[in-house]
Structures are given as structure tokens and as C-alpha cells.
Image 1 (tube, rainbow, N blue to C red):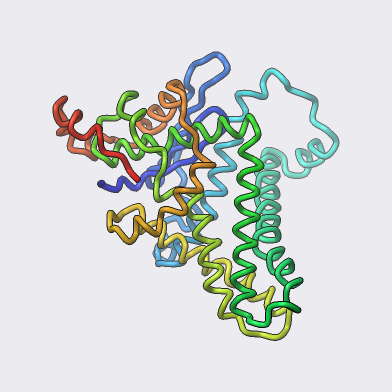
Image 2: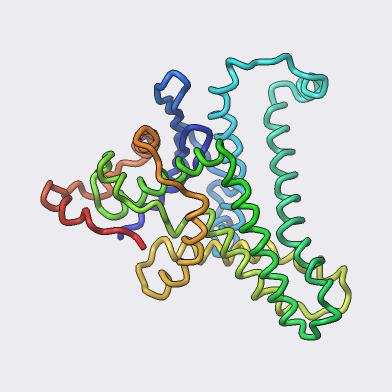
Length: 322
């Protein structure tokens, strides 16, 4: 395996792929054509050196992923809103009057902040209060922290399972699988075509699902060491530690995407197991969209040295990522 460094995410009927500061969004339009948009995104860190420091870069990349994800999701959704346009409501007219052309970005920002607050509340704070009901039965703070972590993992898995049952989300997960397959195809040294992508693995160590799962696991370890009597301080420390936990989790995911070490592979298995829920086998037309997104921002031929011939391709065809 040769790490490529590219990554992406599924959007509505399409895929976003990012390579350094360049990104593309490929969308299958209602008429069947593939629309590809290329753009640049430096992120909140830009060219600042501090944004590349270990631990800090994890938080920076997480925020950048949310911002870029919202923007590209809005772009892909625009192709499916044209036939159902409605007059803007009173609140929308108010925002357009106050913020003008920036109204859409303001809405995106508010939505993103609200989503983060809800996620922190449900997956970080709520498990603490639920585990509190067992304080009369469990004396050990360590066991309570572990129980809190188990509840957190349970809520996360339940959330993923519930949204997986939605038809539209299932199609997004199929595009998610196509994204992983393309990256695995490239990193395993195969020519990027429909046949090779189809037989590549839909699981990848650098997936956002794995990142969130690792966040849940590492939070258990961190919260074991919170030894304060005040419930308010316990909650405050949990909130303050979230950026640190995210930074540590990112470093592990980054290492997992670059290493073939047996121990790293073993530790990555639970996160890949979660990907069984968040990725699905894509259809061929979805793979075509993924290939278009990759080729718009990444020269995979130069990356591989384009040394493959038909015989080499056949020999490598049986390789699969665990």
C-alpha cells in the first residue's frame, strides 16, 4: 500500500474529493450527465505553520471537513432543487435583507454550529448523565467512566443504524463506498478504471466513521482520569477535553492510513467494522462519478509511476484491504 493523501466524502448523488488545497465535486445530475466542479480551499489554518502541529492539525482538519462538507453538500443538492423551487419564506427574506449574498453562508454556519452543539450534547454530555443513575450501585469511578463510554458507543451505533435505514442516506452510503473503493484502487497500485475499482475494498482506515469511533474509544481513556467531586466540573472537563481527544484520534487515523503494521491494522478493525454500516457496495454509475471526482484533482498515473501492464494488473487483482 502506498498512501495517496487524498480524501473525500459522499454528497447528494455525488462525491467530493480533496487533494491538498484542491477539491472537486462530481454529481450525477437528473439528466444522467456528470457535472464536475473544481475549486480551491485552504481552510482555516491556511499556510500557518501552527495549523500543522500534531494534535492541533486534527482539530483544524475536523473543522475544515465540516465547512467544506456543508458547502459541497449544498452544491450537490442544488441540482435537485431546480424542479421544486418555492418562494422564500419570511425568515429567508429577512436573512437575505440583512446579510445579502452572504445569507446562504450564514445559514450554513448556523447549521454547522447547531449540529456540533447537538453532537456534543448527545454523544459527550448525555452519556455522563445517564451513567450518573448508576452511581448508587457502582462505587468505582473507573467503572463508571467505562460504563459512560459504553453508553456513548451504544448511542453512536444506534444513531448510525437508524439513519442507515433511510432510503436517501443509503444512496449516500453507496457513494461513500465508491469513494473508498477509488482510493483503495489507487493506493494498491491498480489502474483507475471501473473493473479495478469494483473489486477494491469499500473499507479504508482514514474514514471519518473510523475517526468518530476512535473518538468514542479514546474519550473513555481520557475521562477515566477526571477525578473531581463537582458534577459541573466533570462536565466542564469533558467539554474542554474534546479538542484534545479529536487531535489524538486524528493522529491515530493518520497513522493508520500510512501504515501496514499488523498492530495498527488490528486496532483499526473496529472502526472498519463500523464502516459496514456507513458504506455500501456502489452501482457502476456511482463508481463512474467517483472516478471523475478523483481524476479532476489527482494525477493517479504520476502517483503510481504508471508502470502497470496487463500482467501486473492481473497479479495485483486478488489483493484486498482487510
